[in-house]
Image 1 (cartoon, one colour):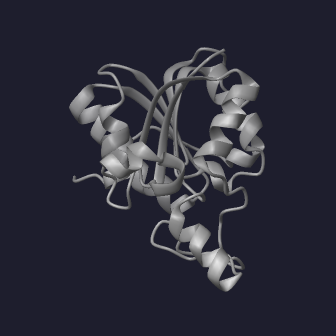
Image 2 (cartoon, helix red, strand yellow):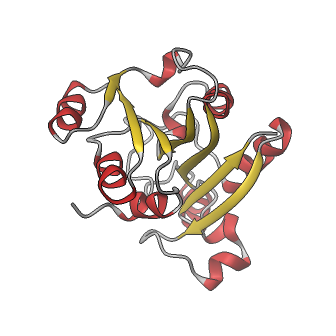
Image 3 (cartoon, rainbow, N blue to C red):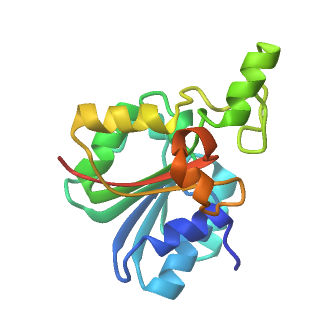
Length: 199
């Protein structure tokens, strides 16, 4: 199975044999690939019954659970890595969930769309409306995103919470790094990938 570009980047950042918890795991494609190619011991969490059935059909361990209810059912240090791809902006309490991710996992990997991208800024400036773009495709009234942030916002939160930024990748809409993004990541990156450690 070929992974989406963002999931491929995440897979590259996970060590072979790791214990992985995937929050909002969808159809389980990431965990399926990690199990087959990196020998990880993984569990997924998702609230959609269709996704649960897809995970089970592909042999992925999955728990039906709403992330807005937290992950208090997992013990401290249960995992080496806790992953949350493109979901942070859609949960009610992102700060609390990040703390919990680093309680149950030694490290966590978080990805999200960058609201500070120049196209978002330009649409607000020129049209005075919430932006719609390839990396933020929903209108304001039907979007699942309730806590949009910029790369700079996220790093400010990490500093306030004492989360260590172990690794950071800023990429374009095709999930590729570019020289221009390296010069001004908050302005030019479409998606942000952060690998975090405990304080």
